[in-house]
Structures are given as C-alpha cells and as structure tokens.
Image 1 (cartoon, rainbow, N blue to C red):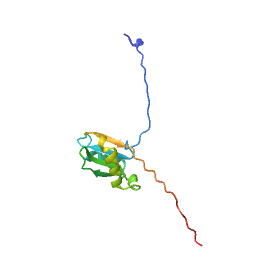
Image 2: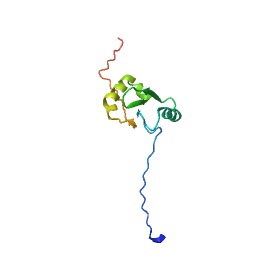
Image 3: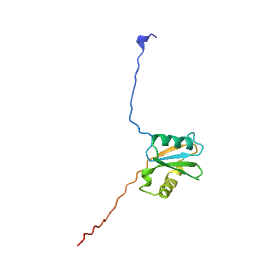
Image 4: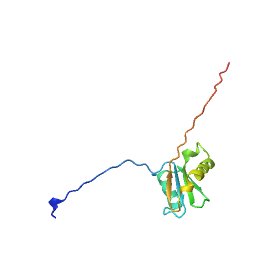
Length: 116
C-alpha cells in the first residue's frame, strides 16, 4: 500500500472544563488510587480554601470533599446524612465519585409589618 491510498477520518469534539473537574462534592472510597493527601493538596492549589475535607468512618468511604458554598446553605451533618442514605451504598472500594449536589432554598409566607 502506498501513501496515496491512505485515508484518515478524524472526529473531534471538545468542551471547556473547570478546575477542579467537579463542583459540589467528591467522595473518596477506601483504597482509591488517588489519595486523600494528594487530592487535598491539589484542591488547595486549584481552589484555595474552597473545599472542606470530612473524614468518614464508613465501611467503603474514606473522605468526602464538600464545596464550602454548600455548607453555607445546609449543615455538614445534613449533607453527610443525605450522602449516607443515597450515595454511599452505591460506592465500591477504590472509587472516586463526583456528586452533583444542588441546594435550592424557597421561603414562603413572608410577612412584612409596616410601622403605623
């Protein structure tokens, strides 16, 4: 086959990413290739003071990294309870899982009293 008979087909796609490559919560399972210390240092370089590190005493879970913006809306305890009920049971040893955790707040029946 000579060079004139070659045909190349290239499909290309790309999109903008943000660093770190997750925005809300990252769950680090035990025995993950990525270690807690390395990830913590990476986050401090990429987003200084942007995430809270929470060590976990679950069977498969080592650490949870939570965006501090979430913790201004809902307590750490409530976040962990939601994760324990709905996310942790599905995480296997060695995994690194990104969790999309959006908090919407609505307030109803606000009464404003005017001074007479």
